[in-house]
Image 1 (cartoon, one colour):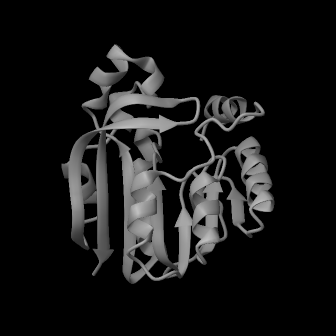
Image 2 (cartoon, helix red, strand yellow):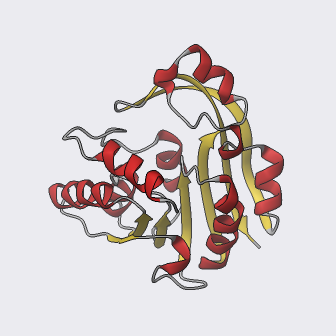
Image 3 (cartoon, one colour):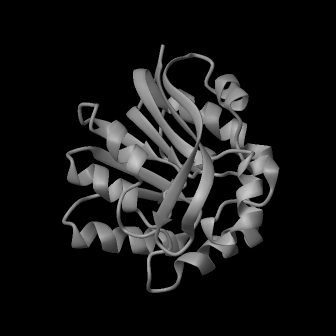
Length: 207
């Protein structure tokens, strides 16, 4: 990943406030409540709000991101909540995860650049055990219209980094779909997710 991309996220996470707050994403929280705790990997986890929540509920948590500043904040949040995280920094294919390692994988606003996002989805698919669960929430391609009305809602302005239902069905073809919907929600997550947006919510079990 390019240095400007890393610099962008390091800059965002370098302030004292948590960019997206310290509370877990609502959809993630609701889906985790339906599962027995096991091992889980959080992709593009930033400042750790979701990983720390899962750890507090008994999950064995791993996470990765490209931002060292994000990791610093995540480890501080974990310390404050008296939980442990395996948090790795770098591009996914270079990290110390292995095939069939995880019972669940969470992609919560994990908007990767166009040239790697499907590649990363396929790598993550390999890291998930058979019968493991994917939990996903991110902005849909229609979200561009919402950003034009209110930039405070956040999200990429590059439509190629946004998601469609067909794209997720293609990237995660070997799954039994539990939930897959494009919907409008109101976000209130820290400094950078505020307002009405269009998201895709997706939960599925690997066959």
